[in-house]
Length: 269
Image: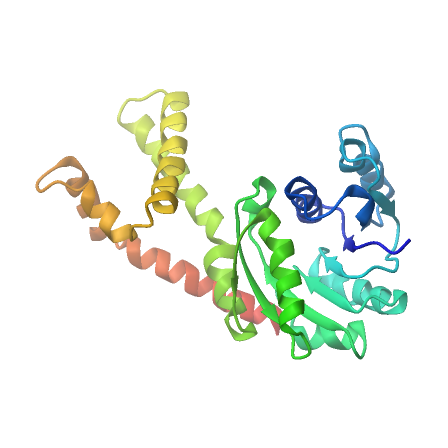
């Protein structure tokens, strides 16, 4: 039987995609297969707590097999071999989530006639809340794009972009969770400095980030409007924001995204 979808790589991202697809109803366990080269990881996936244990019928194989389409979720250095194996297996529709690997290379490695696409999700895919951009290769049709975006929507929100924007996507949303984790770390330390126990500061800082993100998502308001709404003239928030602006925090975030984008460009080259 030919799988509806083969995921090459059973690591965190591959497993998150598979789980999202199964929970969302995109496919049944018997429609999916995961190719994982590591025997130790195969055993984890097959354990009662693993994906195959929780979703009986999910096939675990050691190398790519024939499928209607495939997602490549391996390290960038392993993508060439994975794509060549997919081409040998006759897979003609391939979506890569490997950072920095260009569509031209994917097309060359997968072989003539294969439709290739790139996606850049972020680590929030592990909890079904990723921000993902998808770019089509030159031979990809609108149907191929619909297929790719449908897969990635199982783990979050998706935007469609041309490939020339993918390095910027990497710098902004691909690396973005780390910037926000650093903000929370700093807020926890600040809470301790002003007298809060660390566990209390940690809980408050975490929930502050979660709640603020939910406000952005639910209200649809622009971030500057939400910021203004909690900044009373002469109040505590205004005093705190003044210090952040005085220390060029806004500029630091701009430079961080620019540096990460440049590094993504270098790695891709």
